[in-house]
Length: 152
Image 1 (tube, rainbow, N blue to C red):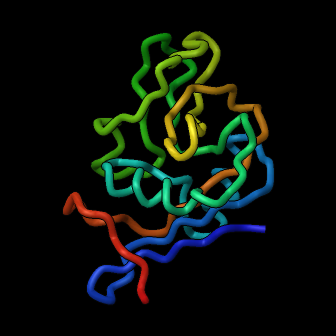
Image 2: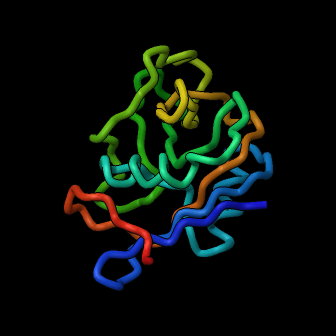
């Protein structure tokens, strides 16, 4: 099963977020998204974080969390976290790290999102081999700083 959120602004589709409730390793989740002409979600601003909170509001997430498109090099201990989007927003500027971050800076090179409290979602580092559900993103949101609304 999957949850699906279509985001609109002035009747123009900006991007799709799709939650897939099937467990995959980070790389297999990324490959799955890419096979659907999308990518693991890249949360480059508060708009996307808010839209994800809305998408997952009624989803029972596993305690292990859900994969997002965060990664860092395995070859450098202090390697920066990057989005898989491959565009100008690749470097992580907007952040929603969990207070426990980093859990394992030596061995964890993939990023996930976990629920904190009732609704809040925060990011954590994780083993890329962990099998988790994931969120694919198709398209790129505008950066106006406001959240898109569902059509009525």
